[in-house]
Length: 439
Image (cartoon, rainbow, N blue to C red):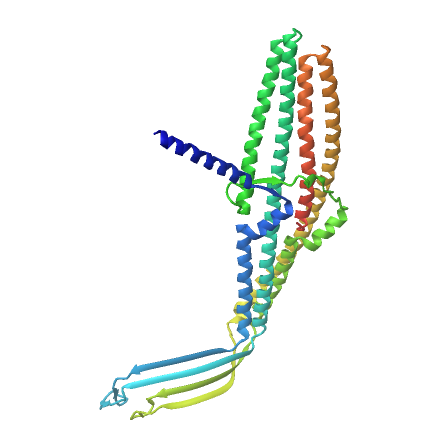
């Protein structure tokens, strides 16, 4: 047993050291741009839309292939039974011997030279579908980036809250130590220390809740980015030091009109509806094609007695086809396509209004975040001054413990408010980039 213990102890030590080393390796400082790059490479949602874009590319190739000729080839072999021949009144019947081996070979080609614009409209629709798939991918990419930005800034905010709470917890413990020293001198009461002990436990609970929230947010980021399990993401500490450019509202509106994917999609939908009108109209026009064929048949069964020969013939010509039923069927489809086109135009106008309103509302909130930041900075300054004055007065027995507790809570609230205000400025900026789709 003693030998086993001597073997187990070093092994546990090695495993623990490896575990600690692995944890150190799994800490990853991540900037926003690096996060966007990882999302483009690893996000399952983005990859799905990328596959859709590739499918749309193939659909365009398929539509263009309609311009190529249609070629049909057939080959058959058959067993022919003997025939039987009657008069018209089914009398005087007689058996007609026939060659029992039959063969047929046919090669036919057709090249459409005019289809009323149907082929060109189908190709145009496929090209617009390709563009729509690319816009779907781009829109999903913007949505994933904005979602990750929200996770990232929430994690940044929570990490800062951990630091603020830890700082206030250390400050509370320092106050408790000072009060215990005063109590030994007979200038502080046990009840005063108890009340601060209660505040300390409250801060510990808040700190634990924030740390748990950090774990949840970190897991969501790691999962979305498909990073190794157990990775701890550390937000870039220089994020809040970067200058946030507050463009004029007109500049944001111009960016939105040029870059917003939803607006581009509405415009594409309008063009697609126009092509669908042309496609329905093409059904009202004749179809013209060049045709050619090569046939080899045997035996020749239209003669009696049957000729046991192979008969070869070919032809070249022009075929014209017109669907007469389209005159009373497709007019309704054309009217439906025109109504859909008008609907697409109205939806485009509606999208313009919604985006304009969205930019204006978020721009006002963006400016408000700066006002909130300045207010919070002033609040922290005043809260620190109030805490220092109250602390000195309490030390000189010129203030009550409740005044000290109020000053501590005010300082904590101001510190947390400043952290949130700084993050909100950055979040509002990225929200403006999201609504203009320039992330």
